[in-house]
Amino acid sequence: MHGHQPHPATPVTDAAFLIKRGKKRGNYSCGKCGLPKKGHTCPFTENDTNSSPASTPAAASSTTVTCSASMEESVALVSPQSVVRPPPPTRLRRALSFEDISVTDSVEDVKDEIEPQMDVCPDGSGKLPASCLWEVLRRLPPAGLLSAARVCKGWNDLTRRLWRASEEIRLRVPSSAQIGFVGSMLQKCSGLVKLSLRMESDVNATILACVAFSCSNLQSLEIFTSGTSANRITGDELSRFIAEKRCLTSLKMEGCCNLGGFNFSSTSLSTIWLSDLHSLSKMVFNCPNLKEISLGFSQQENDRTDLTTFVDGLGRSCPKLQNIHIASVRLSHSVVLALTAANLRGLRMLSLVLGSEISDASVAAIASSYSNLELLDLSGSSISDNGIGMICNVFAETLSKLLLALCPNITSSGIQFAAAQLPHLELMDCGMTICENNSEILTNEEENDRELHKTPDSKLHPVYQKLIIKHSRLKKLSLWGCSGLDALYLNCPELNDLNLNSCRNLHPERLLLECPNLESVHALSCQDKLVKTLQNQVSNNFLALENHFPSKRLPDGSKRVRIPLFSPQPCDDEKKWRRARKRHCAVIVAS
Image (cartoon, rainbow, N blue to C red; front, top):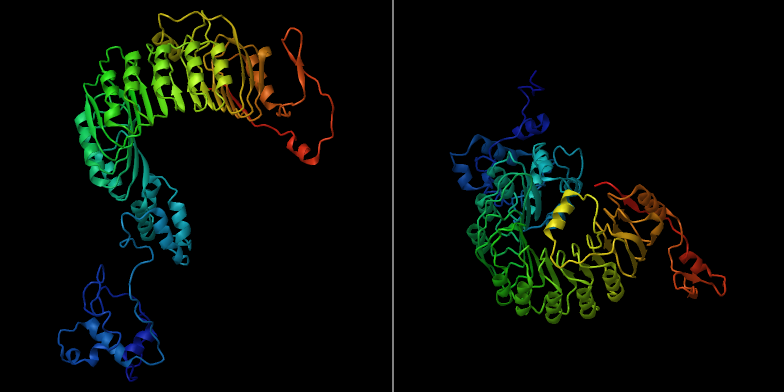
């Protein structure tokens, strides 16, 4: 019933009895000082290795020794020499403890600390090494980590180390969640550097206060809204948050319709994105290290924001600006003149979208002040083919991205000229430029865009136009909504993305694609015959290399005829180089 007991007449010491019987249950108190073991460091651990407590006079005359201490003393005195006990470790710690990990340690630093313990298997891991379990848990989303922490103590320790070592979190906050949910999640990640929140509920200053309190080393903050959620943060609250977070370098926020006005002052901020702005009374950026700014305004006619005054002060308060993006219906030629007067010498990307009053004169002002632009976006403006000519003359050696969507005064001749005169061009967007006069019923978004961007000086295009583009570096071409385009010939060996959505009048017989690296073609709202022609052309298994044989034209100059003068036997390397390969290209016809 109670296990094997020694005979009463047999003299057995306490140590021999414990060794023979075995230890059935651990002691909750320390064997040296008698205090509870949990969270306790015994002060006698280092002093009892050289001499036993019973060998000292103080220990012999002590009368306050507990029962557990006396048993340990007796064991130390009469234990046989054949029993060899390992010396106590100099530093007691659990294999997966996290008390000694600093809040600034990264995931890789903690992983390096776990790697020497490859043979340690946490509780409940099924003999899986700690390093393998670490790699599994670090790939789980936040909800998965919360569930894993409830499995066992070993997993709980490891997940807490993961939380503290994490530097970036993307968190979706459901509408039913309260502010305590966000606070509890952020308190787990004291070393957080980048935070992205997608809010399904309303956003207010409480979120900013929670982030400021929990993330002292935060460098990047993103707040996005979804569904019916609203952003109720005011300009003063956001300005106070930016001024207090001295480590913040990037801020991106959606739904900023309630700011009213702001005064941002920060020496660390380098990137700021704000969208849905409306009727701002003041906009002050006192950020000397700001390099990228993106401001999206609501497309409402009652917007009263003074963009001219704002742009005029950018040169003095933000001299290091490199990328500027402003989307507003209040953009005009006077705003462009104020921007050129700012004298931003490091400007490389300029995007002025939805400014119907921006004309060819604005392009001339931009070209005279900023001749090193790599990206130029004038979508929704009133520039014509003459403006494209000025762009090609000034930015021929630097421009790699040109976006001219929703520009009704541009024709196919101007697009062809830009493709021919800009050798470094990699992206071109000409959506809704080549449109027929009496187009069919458009989608709601396209109809709103056309009504929004009508200009009094827009000229009528021919009903049908053809477009021929030959470019060696072009990778992305967008011709969405070009309903006036009926013929398209592309010879672009590096092109991998082509957008032909809503090109309803494009004839299948007048389509030719010589793009061997094409990966995706968007053909939403196109004719069925055109879709089949696209599928046939992109799925053919043919040589996509250009023929370098001499050529000549017919007398009318309408067609080029290539005539090989000789047919030499190609070497093995040339055969391998000219080997036909099957191209994998997807024709996307659904949204």
